[in-house]
Length: 190
Image 1 (tube, rainbow, N blue to C red):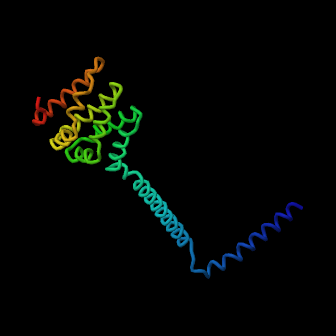
Image 2 (image 1 turned 30 degrees about the vertical axis):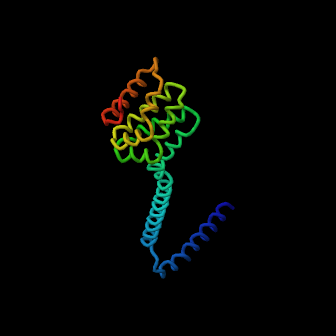
Image 3 (image 1 turned 45 degrees about the vertical axis):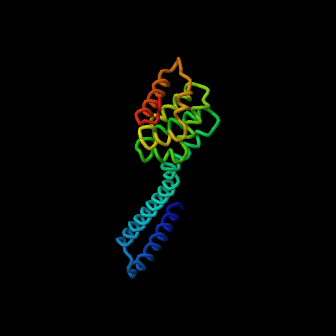
């Protein structure tokens, strides 16, 4: 019984294959065309994935890179306006890192960073906050225009009124450096 079933099944399958073969013979479609279609589809899908990746990278870049320029400096100046001394120190530290050339130093002054640093220095209650404010002011004072702007905002009196620290010598070093810079520029009468 099994043999008859197998024989009928094989004759059915063979008949079926023979029925498809003549249709293929009359068709203009062959195996090479099928391979080239598959390769073309893979190539198009590859380009689709590349375009999706490039689009995603462009969108992500557009969202991230605006924070790298003036916007980041403005956010850093805004950190100086917060009441928490930790954020003020972080803002002052970032400003001292941004102050690498005269153009950026002046940009910081124009955004109000120098005035905020002086306010921070005047209201600081701990040595670490005073140290970061003075360090940022020293970084800004490498430009003559910034020294003039600091003089006009009354920086000399604020720097002189900053209490000396017995624990951190850097405060005294930065304070003396700033006052000497004002003397070199002939803004300090004493």
